Length: 352
Image 1 (cartoon, rainbow, N blue to C red):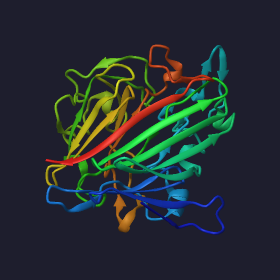
Image 2: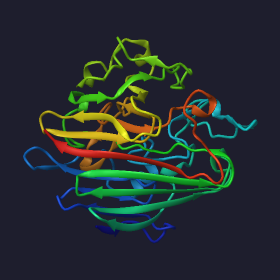
Image 3: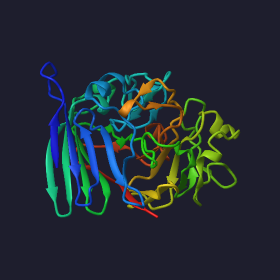
């Protein structure tokens, strides 16, 4: 477990990279700027390691060019809130920042991805890790309440990247954190992930309008190109003519996971046949957003000079549903004083 300062006397507070390594040689590199995970090195079936997450080489690039949210912690609210407003206990909050048309996306102009987190390296039985803390003041990006968020990253000797979230508030608020890592199990600079097999443990999803805002409906995946209950190559249907998919430019949907609310269980499995790398995602969250990198467009140059083209990475963002504060029948994202928000997600790496 190491850390190395990369920035810069002129920058305050200081932004740093940290590296976690387990007994098997897996490495996870992140920065306290946005809790951004910049590298994850995992082996293939022959023991050859590759970095399987998209990203940049320097903190400056993340600070100045990370409109794609590579590897970042997202908050206070992951995904979208329609029309930049919601109500709590009869009070309307309509001051959220519009950064996705007329809607609010991933916490606003300066979300959790753009702030420096207090970082403490920690260790325990079978893991090396880091505790990240951010104190979000009342009114930041339009959200009520002084919110204290902590995120624990663990790299275990079972080859798991564990993310444990906690938060408290002094006013009623909404909270829905996630992580926005992009994966390519062939390596961040390898062949297109459109050849990956994908399984999503969900029989239902939340349809959206053209802006990605849920309509409030809950629909079955049965008979649609959103049915990933059996593993299949997702690139075969990412350009589906189904309007539910084409209106969003490909997969960028929230699936409702087949488990009890709050239960920790399987969300998704991604598999890359040539390398044999497999990633299983487990979570206590009720949903997962599978995003196929539709908005990558060749404008971002990442590690090693790799130019990231459309769909060069995919995200599996565990979360509550988009726009939940405006739909009473969606699982609640309300956090009240005296309560503690807790959530856990695991990305487990293996081979076949």
